[in-house]
Length: 153
Image 1 (cartoon, one colour):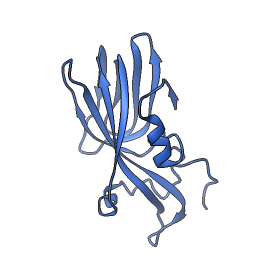
Image 2 (tube, rainbow, N blue to C red):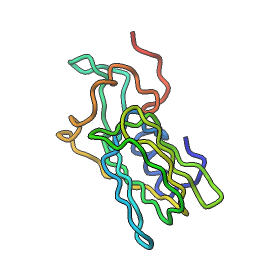
Image 3 (spheres, rainbow, N blue to C red):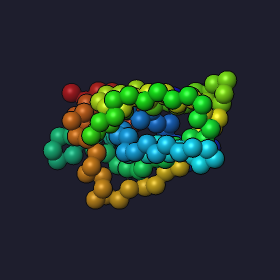
């Protein structure tokens, strides 16, 4: 969900083919910096397709590292940092100070950051890196990592 105009978001939509919600995506790093340098949240995200691979998992493609460059942090609450940090959902909303970055968790980190601005960029990951995606939840359709599709049975 996006309720705040973000520089670079159109490139994400073009890459994934839809506006991602980052369900089951993994937070790789959170690099906090003092102003004037931006802080950066890096997330491994991908597109989940409706067809199955040879192991019975939903096939994934379009793996990328998405960088959220956060400028002018005025408030922050992050909890639960762990060895693995799987998002349930991530969104950015307009706020009086500029915007709010929200991260809800399936496992690990969650929180909210209030900042002046956020912009995003993505770096495609090659096929050999795609194996790093969490497999546990991929037998269930990830409705936020692909457009609405009927559940497979």
